[in-house]
Length: 155
Length: 155
Image 1: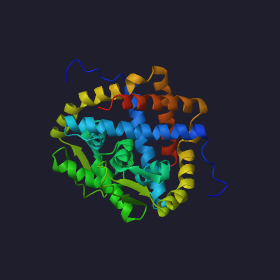
Image 2 (image 1 turned 30 degrees about the horizontal axis):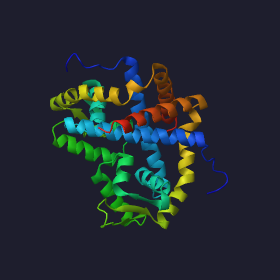
Image 3 (image 1 turned 90 degrees about the vertical axis):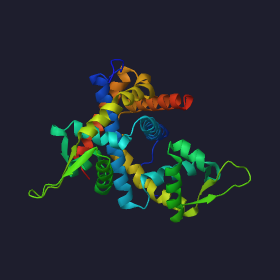
Image 4 (image 1 turned 180 degrees about the vertical axis):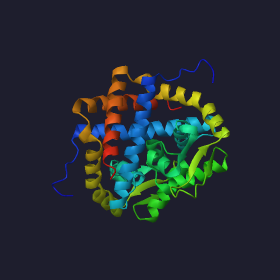
């Protein structure tokens, strides 16, 4: 506790706490909805979305961890569990030394396709239906700017 | 996949993905910064903040789980780990049947006080410094409105 700390103003504190709380609450609620109606957790969903967005549904394990900002050990455990449920396979790549690939399976594609309609409806009901288009644009700008700064400074 | 699904528009998809990604990235980065410089993980931090905001630093286990939208089992495991590290104690309350309290200890208060300056600096550097006051007000409004809707409809 030194005097050089730039403590948050009441407005900043309210904004930051609201933002953190929104994330906690939305994440928790979406997770419960998703898991009560499908076998896909939010973490599964995040991995599967990244893979379906990748060419041939495959990505390096380390790139996937970086994209989600997960610790490598968390990613390894999670991928092992998803592989055990048949959603992804690991493809070792011993010759190039840059680590294994994670590849989505047909069952993985079926799982995310089955979960997607309910996920989209929940995102609308919980979030998008309560945000105006102008607010959504502000949110997009903030998100993309802050992510860009983090990309530029990978500390 | 039925035709009644209101799929996201490109703008909505961009906003939602940006928002999810911002949380993933900010959460991951803050977590790494916090844990490299203190013994307090973001989950510990969230619990400790809720307790320090509560009268006498105590809250019902179930109220804490509800406030963070954590599954009860996740909360139980996490509180057990924090208790093992001396940050909180559980106080059983057999007579009223409404479950145990979680109470912050002196060591817990010291841990969050030690972590807070670095946490605040990181929140500024990673996030607040890149958001204008007007944008911050929009974000606060969105967060509080969406949380209020979830409170009204605890599905």
